[in-house]
Length: 566
Image 1 (cartoon, rainbow, N blue to C red):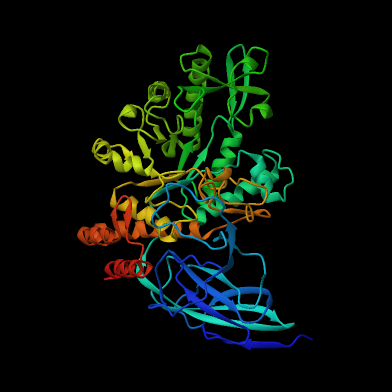
Image 2 (image 1 turned 90 degrees about the vertical axis):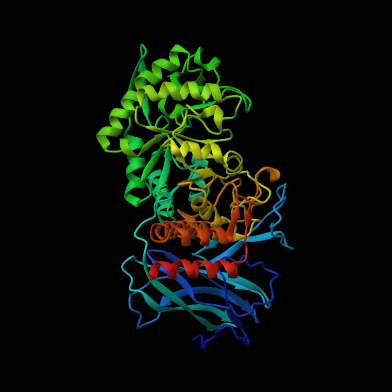
């Protein structure tokens, strides 16, 4: 029989280990040694939010098979549940340039990011590791003070020992039943090689039961992090037949994907995937992607990216919108899609992409395709991420400029809002420098600040291209700066693959928390607009100028919750 030793620890050094509370916005590197008491250790949240807690375990002896759990202590006004996961580390090889003045440095080159919830941990003497605790707070939760008891259990010299820490949680008399900020992180599910990483490298057949099972994993993860817009390629999910210029359309796979995300709660709006692509280099005109019969003639044309083309026995090609074959396809496909969306009750939530990131030079071809599409999808909003502004004025309804373009052309976008246009923004490989982004090497607070920027500058949505575009066969251990550093670490993904599951990351948790912040700010704006403006201006001084003090941020957020609860 293995003897058990129960060590009730609240941050004081033991023979074996200690648990310290660290702010959930702090990135904890492996070489950190000092953990002073927090000025305020109370976690503060509204009902409807998910509270984030971070503890650090420090081993004073070698500890094996460490696991953890967290519970709401008896006597609480409402029953709360909690989940735990170990924060693990990914290597970052080449830092991006131009670098932010706030760029974080790691002596080892490893940065904390994935949160792994299905593994045990081994720690050597003197080693530390963060533990993440998430506490979803139901909207029905009664306001008051709660205590979350966290227990880490491991083997020290073959004996079981437990280390505990109690974290105070205050739930305010403020309720967030749902969030209104439009959020999309594009998923790579159409590339089945990405899905295979969730199946231990084994093949995943498109549209097989396993394919849909793994897609549901994505839907559930996105819903849990307030992602409410999902990109679905209507054309890629449609089964075509083509005889003598006449198309038929089977939308059943499109329907299945949309229904799956809708049921999960991650589909308040649908982004119809892009209809057109660059015909060559970056500034070259956009061509429409057209399904044609796979024959000798079409094989001479530039192939489009539709991954299901071979699956359906057709060839996806790129043609200018002026080409009769492109027009023949659009003239039939777009009305059929509109009618089908109307039948399914999805037309009102459907938006249509034309092509990604048009520039000033290829804007004319973009506007030409957009105008053609609008003839057959009247009332459907055209949405796209853009790298230019005035050249696209007649082609877009939901504008998504990259953050620095939003900054540079801010007055232009304010005029568009007055005209009734919808305004979001996005980040990706850029902007770099001192702009907020979700790169791994940036302070975690700047990922959260993205949605304070949403509020300050009146942008009602946020888009990012990289939910899960993993660059290697082992994303939990591969260099996170993809393509030899061309993509900054963390740009291509914000979740990680497990076996038939996804692991979240500390960045994804911070992003979710920022979405809640936006909602609280919008609530305060209705009650006290001057107070809401004052609070956001105290931490977001400009598009690329922020107060990164975590202690000060917590003070401001406390004021936000207190102002709403009065």
